[in-house]
Every structure is written in structure tokens, then in C-alpha cells.
Length: 305
Image (cartoon, rainbow, N blue to C red):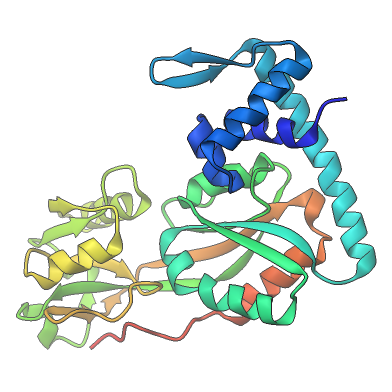
């Protein structure tokens, strides 16, 4: 009989593309995942992974086995959901994926609340790009995801995945303390031309929003610096190197040299919780979603001037 833990390891490698990434998602070491795959190869008398340069690739047989593993894991999930539902209280392990600013600005309070009220529930958090996390939920790798979208890029809704709105995260214009905008009560989008911009790299939703918004207002944005993390962007603004649009969630207290100014109409991103339809009745899911909503909005840590 095939071992479910080994099938889970193979499925994770299939989804994440490498042993190291699968290990991070499962909470194991890479060597532990490799050992599980090796045991599964012996068990099936089949080569499952092949060396490709510095990495590995699944064989054709492995891909078929990974698809079967996904079906089996879905069956196990339904059984676990039924048992937990009958117990009537959140319990067991719940894996949660959240994008960086939600993991920093919202999840700590939510996880602490859940741990205090539901000691039988073991929630495990991973920081993941929001659009990757939706696919992880759909594939059964993650139980619950906290993701976001903007008006220009609605959140994808794969078949078999349900979602609930958590709340709306307003964004501010961040400028150096000596910038003329600091003397204004608010700034309108049509006033944003001629600025030196700092934002996330191309391909990220924040970058796309900035490009489309300014072009719609008749300006071609001059992007002088890019950074993955909002905290890096904030530091660059504080150093007087440009301006940026920053979501309030998870930004933290602004350093000296940076000032937040309201923009009208305000850029807004929406936060969602997502889970598989098959797990919708699970008390751990329903209680975590309820708790996410009850902690929204989080205590403000950035106050526009």
C-alpha cells in the first residue's frame, strides 16, 4: 500500500517545482523530503525524480502519481472535515498562506487570538505571494490563503475555491518631509505627474496599478527605484529619493523623513480569505475566517498627516 505521507511529499514537489520549496511548504527539511521520495521510489519500483542541471524534474510516471496523490489528499481532506465538523470545534492542523504585509500587519493578532481560544487548533503560517497562494489553495497544498487584489487586477477565482472579503486596505502617497505635497490636505491623482517614483518591480500588481493610473491621467511615470519590500520603499522615500504609493496594512510606523499624504480618489486594495469548497464546512476554516474579519481593520500604525 502506498504511504500517504510519501505521496504528499511527491505532490508538494510537483506543485512547488523543487525539493527545497516543497520542504519549506511542508515544514520539513529538504533531506526529509528527499528521503520520502526515495522510499516512494523503492515502494513503487519507479524512478520519480530526474536530475536536471542543479535541480530535479518529475518523470512522466511521477506526474501521474502526483495527480493521483492530489485526488487521495482531497478524499482525506473531506474525511477530516467531516470528523472535525462532528466534533463541532476547530482542531487539527490548518496551513495558512498570506502575502507579506498581511502576514506582518494582520495575522499575528489573528493567530494569537485563535491559539488562546482554540488550543486544539494548530495553525501554521507561510508568507507567500498573493497570486501564488490562490493556486496553492486550489491544488490542496494550503488550507487557507489571505490574498489581495486591486481594481485593475481582480483576484482569480479557480473552480472549487471559495472566497470571502476581509476588508479594504487604503493606500497613501508617501513623500519626503520637504516635499510640497506635505503642505496640502490631500492630493488628487491628476496632480501626480512629474514625480520621481519608487515602486515594486514590473509584474507586481502595485507596479501595474501605478503605470495604468498615471497613464490614464495623462502622465508617463518616471520610475527611478524598484524594491520588492514596502519597508525598502519607505526607506528610499525617507531618504528623499522619490515618492511612492503605500498600503497602510503592515507598513508600520514611518521613519523620520517620510510623510503620508491622502490621495483622492484613494487607491484601495481588497483582502480576501480563500479556501477549497470541499473544506468549507470545517470549523477551523469558518472560525479562522470569522476571526480574520473580527480583527479588521487592524489598529492603525500609519496615520496620514
